[in-house]
Length: 531
Image (cartoon, rainbow, N blue to C red; front, top):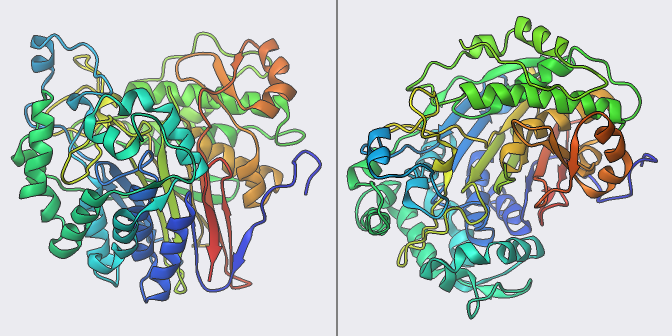
């Protein structure tokens, strides 16, 4: 280990297959599915279903999903956008007449139609080997028979008491006598078990049509929502063309907008115009990362939206000319104020990220989220669906690309990543943590490729993040002590993060040796394991 890093967990190494998730039960479920003859897609969906049970504060069937899939490790990468849309009645005019000026978290207006279930079913149908009914068995068993709360889940529950107690169904499911349970407490979700069984038996129609959909619509309508059965029946994700850029001699792939993967690529393009000096945690290197992030996020908040309804200037945002312009705006000695206007053309929220590589080297980069910890806090009684609050990413400003509109998808923070080298995929990877994710991708890859760290070392390093639109930087403890004063002298306002800063998983494919190497973030409870 290097002298700047305390000893941490070891890398996982295997020959045949590997899964890395943020919960041990999910990693084990993925391996069991692979042993049963499933492939990487089957294993990722099964692992995610488990996490919807055991890590419900981070993900759920009431959330959204984005996926990058590489068949056989090829660069013929399939991207799937499984993010949900607003109800057909959601217009700016309606909100204005209703006197709604802010989309509150604990509100049906923060809930778009969940896209995850449709995405899972479509991906398994198109690329998997096993039926959903078999893939869901580990999750169903845990939901019905019970599961023990892990330390990070207990931490998240304690922090969300005020949200969960507002909804009687969420409180009855996740709290004990109205209070957050401790690690080791056993919980059950029989309603969710029955819902997963129905989806496994009948397919996604069991979720988007019929009794389960009727309960979801009734629950949201009772809270004042605009959702209809027609909105749920119309839910459909789509295959999209991945976007990419080169970074330090490799090709990095992301999903296109409405996700913020394009912002991760922008940060990398800016960083390419600088050569790091010294170690990975030198203040000068971190200053450049912060400034590149602040500039790229300024573009995100102005331009990134649903490309099905808005023109997003993808070519401009990934152009060398814009990268040159933004790099030139960075003063290595001072935080840039004010930020330059990008030509037209928050809070760390929770998510789960999963990567799987199977024996045939099919590689999956898979991310599923309900946005804030425990999402909106709204939960159905019988079917056990906890709704996300992704609609909060919309703005209520006429003319803004990311303004609310009927059947529209909001700007999304969740982004799966994939790296290729020499014409083959070498690493599915992802970094959780709401708004942090785009910087997290760039920060992680810079540590790997600029400083020669291994996967686990790069994941373990302390993190920092400039809150979008400000010079305020959240910095984790050890790093805040070592470089905080230097960053403050450059004009940044340094403060501790309000919550743990994200999580990460990655699997490296060594084509020459025929081995797989995995890493998983200690900020979560999970692990990487191989066969």
